Image (tube, rainbow, N blue to C red):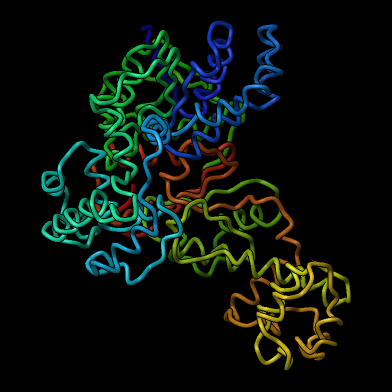
Length: 543
């Protein structure tokens, strides 16, 4: 086996390098012999899309003279399976075993109320969200990612970290026994015993009962994020390989809590076989800022990365958002507001953890659309549905025929004071699936004629406070909802691997963390920027 470690700072094209090596491998190997894995669904989707991208194929053709367009097109379905997360790969190797679902959790909490003690009947939309956000499942996942049993893992946590999980270790052990019993025994009568969860997928695969797979070329992207158990799986996958590509950057290892080991990765990648150094993302000022942030880490491990910035100068702006709710008095914020409102540049508002309430409030006051990049942000739900209805009503109120689906959404969202005598959900559901005008529903007494006197849906809608109604009006009236999403909000861990024109980074942290952890987080956040980096310095602890 030939192992090729590929290292490089942010924006140096590690994923592009893997894509080109994938194309190279097609000269000798079948697409089914090439496996590409990453650690998140988003990252796996990204590299798959890049392999399938006509522009990537075109650039490779121009560079090498090899035209792979037809081959890539014909083998697209193979990559749906072979370019994936490590969890999905391991699951597929175990056949048709069922995965623990949200419905299973609902049965579990109904039978054992302790699972609902701190979630208060919170609804989880999908299993991945459950394992990330429920205190017990989150704790159990991280313990297993770190290769530790529950009690030893609990002992490694600080008091603040233990507080975040809410449950005592005694409660966690009790819940674990109930959970394991449920997975193995509770559903036997329903024919669904031996249910898997995400960690089961990887742990089972690593056991001796599963043979080492026959993989000719294995590629691991974002390898610095691999947990203890994932590294075992990668080793097993590579046993029969001719080529094993492992791409990553130790300076971007920010998932220590989930079992990643930055120290060992730094040592493993001290002398990589391939080192990429041309930066395609960060301009000079931001490149220098990132270098200064990570310098202590480089000094500790005895190396300095080559990292050529883009020729553009770039910009770094330091400000304070929390004391400056009177935004008119800060020239830097004026500049930020102008770019937010009057350009098509992309922005990410990011922070270490917690709820970005101040950031959200700032953007909402500007009446700008926001797209949260993860479901971890709970303090604000962007009213996309309400905005869509506001826009749909503009044409509906003018007498234009719209689809039954759209009409039902509008009528259901109208305040009950404006419903006619014949209104009912059952009556609406019985209508023929064809376009309808507002006059039809008025004539049939589903809604009252008075609603035709307004083209502003917020005056007749149910729910929403005045602040949100005004926000919805402004978004639609200024056609902001028709713009391509460009203002995003997420924590630092979510945005790793992404890039934006501008990064607005809140340096605040809620508890003290190890020095190198803070530096890596700061480094990852700042290095997402293509043009400008805006630093928010708030009171208290900071990165």
